[in-house]
Amino acid sequence: MRSLFRLSGEGEGFVPPSSNDFELPPVFGDNAFTTKPILLVFLSVILVSVFFLLSSRKAAVVPSKLQFAGESIYSFVRNDLGRDIIGHEFMRFVPYLFTLFTFVLTNNIFGIVPFLQFPTMSRVSFPYVLAVFTFVVFHYVGIRKQGIVKYLKEIMFMPGVPKPVYILLTPIELATFFLVRPLTLSLRLFANMFAGHLLLLVFILGGEHLFQGVLGLKLISPFAFAFGIGLTFFEFMVQCLQAYIFTLLTALYIAGALADEH
Image (cartoon, rainbow, N blue to C red):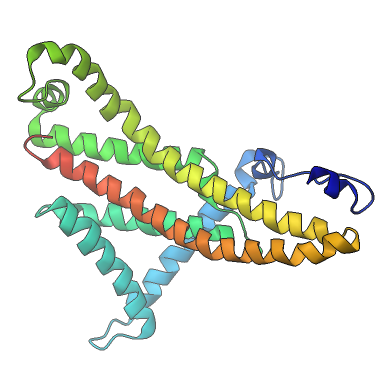
């Protein structure tokens, strides 16, 4: 396949997309705070805020389409990710879960929006920060409910386990609660957004490169574009699913911290 690419264009081989395509220069100025991912994060905050302010500004018994859309998203987070997972204490965590879900979803969907076309969560620093917030929230909840001594004791010494097993189990539990959970939470979101965007780049840029080649390659290029379009719809599903999973796991961790035994 690589030899075919060398036949196209001006004889130059196809340079496949890589992690370098995620390292974007500043949009203006010369500092790290004006790069496209940073600006997209600010844009997402503005879009989410404006959307829900407009959808709730003139609330009525018979909702408008905008009000219905806003209430549907809120009800989904409140009921499916709050009440059903956390239980009777869920309402005080709904604002955080709602903010988390809408923020992650909006930044994920940026990856398939024309002219933006970059999923912010494909930069691992953003999922790390969100995971740290979740880490602090569920540990704070557990410590406040049970006290730090009891909370740590239940993590380190699971009830009903033979004492010799604690030699192996206690380090695993500590690593799980204080290292594995935030890492897997963030890396799952990052890896899916990174891989999905990379695949889209491969097929779209590959199709463009084939189209500039000889006749035989031009005939193949529509298939690459078609596959890229199909992947876009699949990527949209993954983007929604990852926002849901991130918020769901956050709710599960909070529910576990609130439980008498976790």
